[in-house]
Image 1 (cartoon, one colour):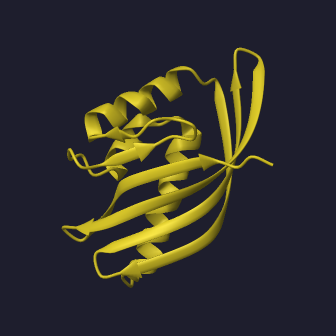
Image 2: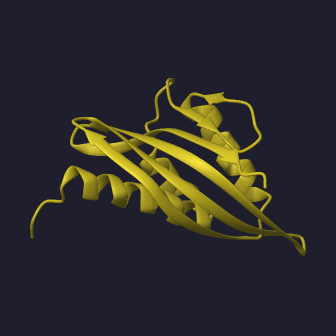
Length: 131
């Protein structure tokens, strides 16, 4: 078995993030994020959330208030430079809660940092696409 290139590893981590998001899986989501106080998350239309503990609470709330979720992504740009990488994606999110269905489009930037030979998500910034 060959080792993944850094770009392949970043894309795999990015895909795992969206799989955890769609599966409403906090355990996997937790394994992907850097759990430090400098992690940053901005959900579409929300204020910045700083630090893993607060970010974890935000995902718990989203998952608790969602019956089902489908996410399609289109990768717009990927850049990898030594220990820092970013992935820009277009997201289409179909969310169902209590019989109510919502569809939203966002553009997101996911920033990964390589620490101890693993790429961790250190920042997720989603912005709604308004047409």
